[in-house]
Image 1 (cartoon, rainbow, N blue to C red):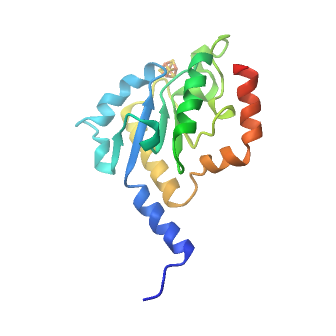
Image 2: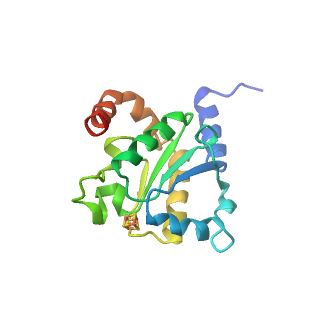
Length: 170
Ligand code: SF4
């Protein structure tokens, strides 16, 4: 039998990977309250191969569930950098997109994607479990198609991210 090409091996790996995703949820804001119904029997995210996990090094997805203040940002970056490639970030709710209701707060950052790459946002204040499930399925499709490449962007544009981090965190 012929050996697989590198491209074929990647396609198979992505197909399998998208069905076995572990997620660390950093509950930064109020949106976290929608996670229990998403995880448990009502919406049951485990039917898609998704499971919550407790340590960054074993997790594939970092879910940032709400507003991010400056102190929290430091921890989020640490968690993100501890995760192994390939890794994916989902911004949950309006606050990580643009600051949301905290848009003029001195202590809340306005755009998470200036500091770490975000593969996908879930809009809303707060997003319902249906929207969360849709986002997970979208991420699975992106992984399958090789489009969830935030971790590559982080390496490629490291100077950009580090400069933005430095401006806020010192
Ligand atoms: S988007 Fe709404 S629900 Fe989510 S953290 Fe911001 S204020 Fe809270």
